[in-house]
Image (cartoon, rainbow, N blue to C red; front, side, top):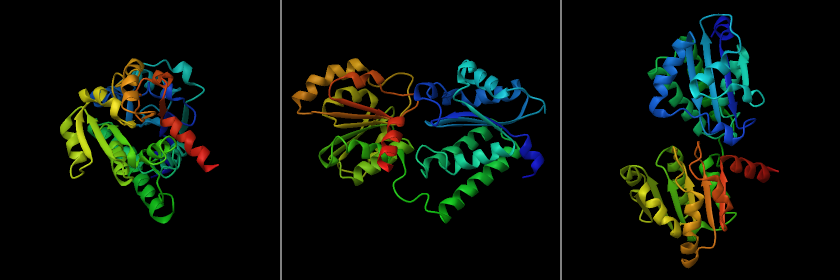
Length: 321
């Protein structure tokens, strides 16, 4: 990639390093209208190329404007895309240009800037972002080539270093965090909301850790059925069966996005008596979704231990010290 190509690449974004969860969760574009919105953004702001990358840790935009004179374009792009006033973001957003933008993209894709250094999911998430940009026809020759090089570089880093050795996924960390409440989860009934990549990782780890029973709840029960097949201690359920199942669960991990909370504070209060009657003393819940899918006020309910993705990072930092 030539220096001329690089110098016109711009970046704007925010991440877990400087942006709190309650603000990051506002920066999630609905998948059902993502292609339409990004395509419209490209044409409205006269961009040559646009690549948007969003996870539960970050929201990043890489773009190339047609005009070589631009004035703080990133905040205006995000305001049109998210409908969020950019003036309250000055303390938590970051932007790069040219070579700095390229270097930052390489660090992100290689998981050197991740919440958990070396976690593998960020690379697959970036691949999906590239596919979406291609489908939206916002990916041009410069960002396409840059993405290919970044992915190849990330692969080389994993093969030539010890970066990816050990358990470096949020799924593993969430269940390990549960062990601070239940030292041995072999006697626990684990519930998982979702059937995507992260939910699958949680499921596999719960099985290998010997969980007594694993229940998977999903909007489409057939997808949950695919996830649990060939495991006798696992059962698939629809989301409608989640609340009635709460009294029997010891651990619940949510990996699914929603436009509402799957469990409210009132729901937690309602099942408290039933849980006590069933001999359940504690309820560990980890909300790994963005936006959050479990009411944060549920942490106020007695005997409920509620954690989110930032809590996982904090627990890992304490563990490393």
